[in-house]
Amino acid sequence: MRVLAAMSGGVDSAVAAARAVDAGHDVVGVHLALSETPDALRSGSRGCCSKEDAGDARRAADVLGIPFYVWDFAGRFAEDVVDRFVADYAAGRTPNPCLLCNEKIKFAAVLDKALALGFDAVCTGHYARLSGDGVLRRAVDDGKDQSYVLAVLTADQLAHALFPVGDTAKPDIRAEAAERGLAVAGKPDSHDICFIPTGDTAGFLAGRLGERPGPVLDADSGEVLGEHAGVHGFTVGQRKGIGVDRPAPDGRPRYVLAIEPVSGAVTVGPAEALDVREIVGERPVWTSGRAPHGPIECVAQVRAHGGLADAVAEVEGDGGLRVMLRAPLRGVAPGQAVALYRPDAGGDVVLGSAVIRSTAG
Image (cartoon, rainbow, N blue to C red; front, side, top):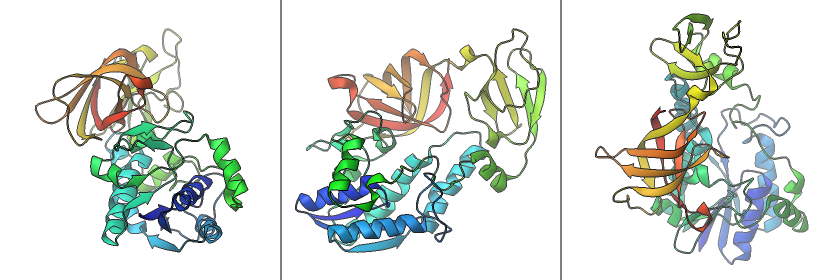
């Protein structure tokens, strides 16, 4: 097969490309220039897509002896990921930018271009596995598993994807990179949101959205407990930095329970009020390409790591998805994704996903 290897400049994508070469594929490496400031240098282990990362990807391609190119997707990334991220926060939702990037950039824009150029598949360093029948599964390394952020992919996209490192633990990937002479073997993993290398999400959003003052309200009494500078500074389940200067009457901590973007109100209350037993999702995607008929038993996951509960899911008449949890989950917010897994065989088979529209206790 002709394979386009997306090389971020990190160890995982470098080893993925190397394994694609070992498998006998005709491999071409490509680095995606996503940053609006491509000359910026990487800072520690934060962020990615820097000038240094592009250089690291090129050197890895040289070691592997494969052609290498840089594709500029900065404009598309800004529109489909960064602007969407900002708009979601302004609307009181909590988006996952990695999920957006996989959906809109790596397996839409990049895959479309790759197929148009005659490639058969796109290879990435994601920690996930694909069975021969195109079934998406969790990675062997639970701590690095990225199947949650890949659950947005369609059956057709998965048919043109390769995830060569999903069957190996991360320490072994680093060891393999060192054995291959790849200089990125000891390179730190990137953390946080790639386009916010400082890690200051609230500051980034404030710079884009400005101040939008509103009240902080007590869920039980409706009392105004304080004022905030904008709903974009909050997520459901947040405990610190909520702008309340006095304790609750019972002395227990308060958490963000709800965000209302129109009025600007942020409602806070006790931890147990965060319990969610029902999730309504929109725009569901099924990795098999077919929506299930009737209710299905599943395991629901609402965060990249953790946040799992046994559940029953069913497609509704409007095409949405209703997920009834058998045990409550906390910190579930509109804008996040709910991914569904098969409950048998270790719960590692991805069934599909949906964007969370609303929740209920």
